[in-house]
Length: 377
Image 1 (cartoon, rainbow, N blue to C red):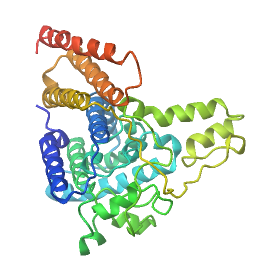
Image 2 (cartoon, rainbow, N blue to C red):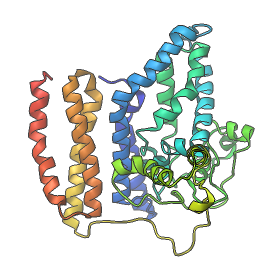
Image 3 (tube, rainbow, N blue to C red):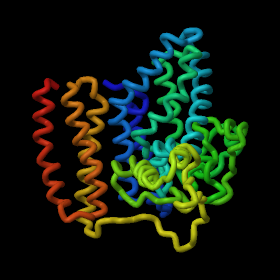
């Protein structure tokens, strides 16, 4: 059994999303689109599946620093738990801020901002590469002497808090807004309007933004998304779209200095011969959200049914992954990755080979089950 707080909360996430959808059915205020919500959740799926393998690295690095470089091994206690909760959020603030201010790091965070909607499913839209750039920001906690197990638990609870702030349906909450991050504050953070960009980086405590000059009050509902829309429902592509753009620009660079600046200056920095700095612009009235979609209701029904099947398999896998052999983990993870990509591609209906590939994916399910069973699960 996997006791990661985030995995344990999966049923709660889906329960709250169901409540939000029921509320929208009553109020007639719609913030969900099937294609966008499925993609958001599938990106969360890819994040959690990749975490099975990457956590070995990230927690391993933290544990080594803790073991050999901690100035003092802090005993586990409710007081140390509270202190770590605050310090972890401070580390999150700086990690989060740098992921907005450094283009290469933005590649690991942009995924979370790609949705042009704002609802609870967006909270699940997480990157599979962000750990590469965020890990160093938390290592001071290991040097201070906070136990790795306590660190993992606090990280999970920090992420859990951030789930509920992804909603349009909660307005400002009075005095609570002065200290804590709230839906109003976080809507600002997801806004692509120039005045809202790069504001409100906090995870739990908005006080960090007020201390470091990055706070912005919500004045009106933002336009959501990124200044260069990803234009795809494929979650695998969404994870690498920004890196692909950087690579294409780097190939056209005329000097190492320009390449370095494209990687480590703010997102959108380009030399003059490639168009110069791409500053954010106001959203025009004729702007339309990306909404590629299949036209047949039976096809939408099929995609949603396959989505439910894939989610059920993924949930079982995540709750019990420690019981799987490595061969089964790899094969099942590969099928999940392919499935999430196919669901996105099916919404877009871009390829004439689409249905042939889907048939192959479906035929792999019995082979996958056989592989799991033959590996001793």
